[in-house]
Amino acid sequence: MTVEPEMLPTAAGKLALRRPGSQGRSLRAWDAADELLIESAQAYAAPEHRVLIVDDNFGALTLALEPLKPDVLADSATLVAALRSNATDNGRAAPVPGNWATVGAGRYDLIVLRIPRQLGYLEYLLRWANSALRPGGQVLAGGMIKHLPDRCAATFERLVVTRQVLPARKKARVVVCAAGEATLAGWQGEWQGYKLAALPDPITALPAVFSRDRLDRGTALFLPQVQRLVAHLPPEARVLDLACGNGVVGVSVLAQRPDVAVTFTDVSSQAVLSARHNVQTFNPALAARFHHSDGVPADAGLFDLILLNPPFHEGGTVGDHIALRLFREASHHLGPAGRLLVVGNRHLGYHKTLKRYFPRVTQCAADPKFVVFEAQPAGRV
Image 1 (cartoon, helix red, strand yellow):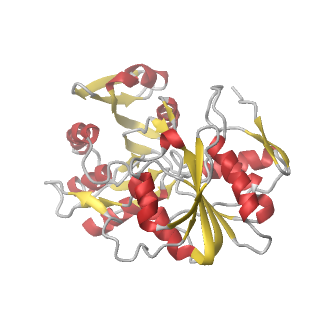
Image 2 (cartoon, one colour; image 1 turned 60 degrees about the vertical axis):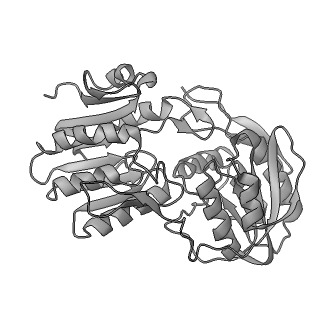
Image 3 (cartoon, rainbow, N blue to C red; image 1 turned 90 degrees about the horizontal axis):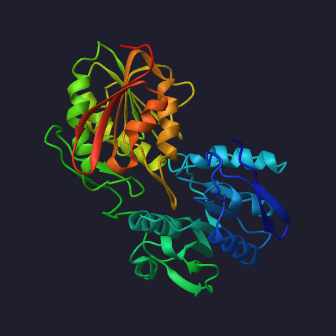
């Protein structure tokens, strides 16, 4: 079902915006924090200013602030397709967002950023912004109050100079900041990780990565089942670590079977950078590829095994819509005897949704919170 765009009023006229992948659900492509950031940026920016937008969600900030000719930087690959679609709907040319793997050394007069939910990632952004601002430059940081991380105010106070906290509107908040002294240089919190008995070095990750400082319970249940299937793969098999996070699953595959080729893909550029870092730390000579992609890359080919711990939230939205899309994509990228191995929260009922694309679904392991399923497409044994 095609989702009809909703209209965002701006000073330059209305923008038609839709949220790709919402599949008929009434999910807007912007929120009140975007509205307040747009209004604030228009008030604070001068024609000669160099402007950067960080972590726009679906293109509302980028398209509304187009007259400022901003650069765009986003950790999430979802912005690429969303911005392309929404720019086309409004008769605009879509800029290509940068990410943390491609970010340059530019200096800016105004940085407009969405406040993330992860406190560590917020600290990363503010430390990075302190180095990226020109003398006299400012940061406009905004978010929905209910989504701000704990100790958010203390983090701003510690890292930047708060010039003004704008009045809250429609449960959104924007903070105006000048640069502080703290930068990423020498920050011990940039990389955090944990040790697994099966690996010689710790698995580490950047701040935007899920469960970067501990092995999450679902992955702990998942890894023995991964090991079981990997042991029976043919020589030089192709494995996809889909939504790879810090890459702990794919690195474990390579540790067990150095003859196989593993592709790592994640919607987060910091996750892909972290997975690459962990593979290179373990053994840079191993066959591994890395993609910053919202799902399975279209040209990825077929795999003998796809491993997936799907995210079940996107911003403030929780559900199985991301998993459903990834299940569908995985079903098109499995070889003749391919398998999909999935772990998920028990309450999400993946045994039902998997059967939309995989007639053969088997429960492999379970605990009170998580379940692991093995799935095969139709006609494959």
